[in-house]
Image (cartoon, rainbow, N blue to C red; front, side):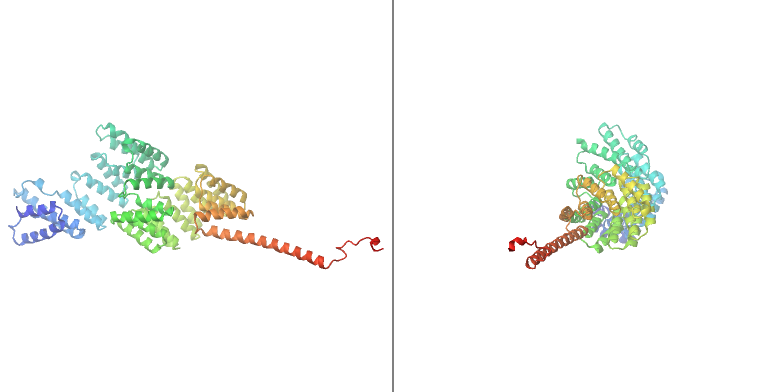
Amino acid sequence: MSLLEQVKLLHDAGLHSNVKMVANLVLSASEHSPDVLTMAQKYQIQVWYGDALYEGEEYRKAESVYKRALQMKKVLNKSRARGGQSTVTSEQDLPQEVDVKYRIHECHCHLKQLKEAVGVLESIPGKQKTPKVNMALAKLYQKAGLERSSITYFREVLKECPMALEAVLCLLSLGVKGAEVASLTMNNLPTLSNVESWLTSLVKGHAHAALKDYSKAITIFKTLESKSILRDSTELLHSLAEAYFMSGDLRNALQVFVRLHSLDADWMRGMDIYAYLLSEEKEVKELESLASLLMAISESKPEPWVAMGYYCAVTKKPTRAIYFAQKAFTIDSRNAQSVILKGSVLKECNKTSEAILHFREAIRIAPHRFEAHKGLVECLVAAHRLKEAATNATNACRTLGNTPRSLTLLSSVLAKESQVVDKAKCMLEKALSMDPSHLDAVYVMAEILGKEQKYDKAIELLRNQLRLQSTCRLHQMLGDYLAATNDHQEALDQYSIALSMDPTNRKAMEGLQKVEQATDGIEGSADDDLDGMEESAEEAEMEPSDTDVEWPDQEWFN
């Protein structure tokens, strides 16, 4: 067995650390003794050496080794052009330059050298660009914000690989019309009657989601999921959960994510959003379990670090939460959830200026994420920059559409200015007409009615909502307004319910104490009055006066 075959055996066996050692020795020997290896063999071993370094995560060194390999290939090509021959049986046996350049691009990506990565792929002649090269270029252009170039290369991917669904989703997210994307997909597919119908529906669902028509997207995904052929498809469940989440239906989104996670505990995509939903519900044990499991699967993805961050945020460890959020962002600078997490924790720590910067960055990365807009507006309100807050809330309505969430966000800012309170109420009424169970709209409307001392209307609004759903805040607010109308006993009942749901609710505790003090004061006053009456009666018995005693007639003395 030749030296080349020995190195090939190690490479094919996946013994990369061994390849690294042997290839280094063999290449060094060939430098001092040209007869050890031919130029073609040196090129082949140089590529294997680069592969071994890449597998060992030595990306910078791997890049330089791959580049040396390409220099050898140029020399080899020139010698062949002059009629030289190599001991390798066929040119097909040698690694293609395209594949080596693709590996160099991967090294640059790991080193966060995106411009260099693009430059390497662009140097590949157009006819030699494979689908994976086109896909990589498209994604790099998308990261750089070069949408037109990105669209061009995603289209090239679909021309050769019509079922490349990631390319489909990326084109839709870049604003390409669903009909055009569907044509690129379906026109290049062979006749597959059992695939064509659900693939067409899937593209339609994602097209509706890209247009922010989440209700239609949800309907399509639910219909597909109900069909036996795609039942329990984790890919489809992820699409459904994401559509629910983006529409603001967090309860159903959480339920679908729970189902997805139970079907495939190793599923990674979207688990950062799942962690956020668990944190919102204060599901600490489930969040801890999810974070631990994801970290055990991979530490090279942002989702495990985001999950750890939310666990630390819920357990009141803000410093660690910020660290984990930053770690996730370092891994993937396009991960919006990591930036939203960091902004939220900074806001809770009253670092408003820093939080504002992070929420702005989140909006830049993912302009359709409502949580980013909400965080920014709340920070601006906290900084008493109401005009700027109103401007950003208006922009949120333009970006997200006039949804119950965006309308409520804008009205929450307008409600703080007496001149435009009526406008805020109109928006809230519109939001509630669109979604009668939208809690944030109910809270803001109840607060406005409370400030206007329209307690009866506020109480009616809260009672109607409690018939639909029960939350700690609803009971706490109802308790506040019942106390304001001196209905102390029911106020105490509402505060007690609120505290049973969340024992740490400060407003419910304060309200309960105030009502108890008020009722104690009334009882104390009544007791004082009764004591005074009893004392007066005793004194009257001991010291009767002319005015109090009815004297008998004179005849009794005769």
